[in-house]
Image (cartoon, rainbow, N blue to C red; front, side, top):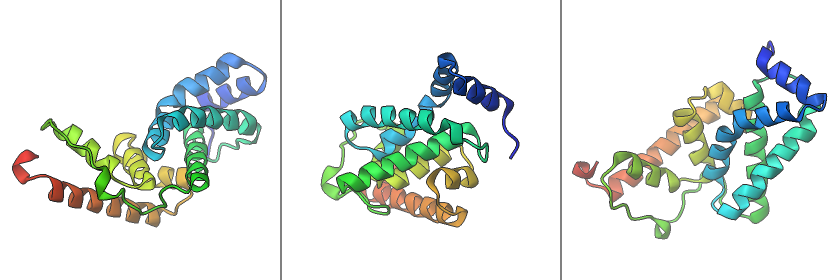
Length: 179
């Protein structure tokens, strides 16, 4: 893959000690990192620590960045892997699990986006992340695969399962006229 000239320039400047360049890398990717961390990690206090850990890893691993993907995709991959490690360490949800029924949130608004976000929050961290990366961040299956380390077919399959779980949740919790 040909390196993106802007990515290449930022990486080279950051590697030469330019702290403003690394600050620009953070600024350019913080929304994507936040999306991944917020969808995967339920504990708010853990999210801040993980975001710091992610950028510390990015800083340490930056000399090894080989432009095999976009810089943002590479950082998203570090984010995803850091969150997965955290979930495994804390023995939280495994891929494919859906949050148990007792944790549902009552929605008083008929705002469809609010209802959909509530439904997405009921999914496992992996499914939430895939839905977010595909539908909100508009990343391709290939980019999501690079981030998560999952084959394209698995990404498609998990997205299918996530959408099915969303449909079942919405069908069970809301009447058609509510949506």
